Length: 143
Image 1 (cartoon, rainbow, N blue to C red):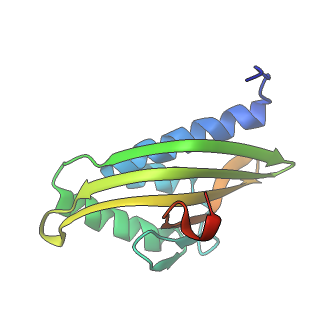
Image 2 (cartoon, rainbow, N blue to C red):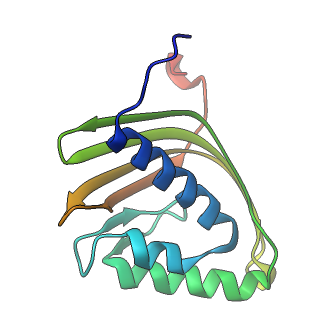
């Protein structure tokens, strides 16, 4: 693998991506509030198979899940992470191993494929779209 210097924007998106993965471990809604697009801009297709429209919608879910988890940290492991920045837009793709104990809601273990779309808004990178879906390698010749 060749070491290639990252641009400042690529460095920032990597930092935000790592912060997002870390925030998922505890349901840190403060990270979402600081880094998601405001208002109803954000569109989030969640691993639970529901859609969340707007920052407040997903923040409410994270607050509820953090409460039922009672401080138990989830396992959030990403792999095959890729960052592409073009102008004021950035795309992050990766595979995810996620496991969490949501107390009375049960334990959840899932492999997933994920996409984050970031947009520079007023000089700051904000998440405008997140898509997470079930991942089953090898189906019909896929990887």
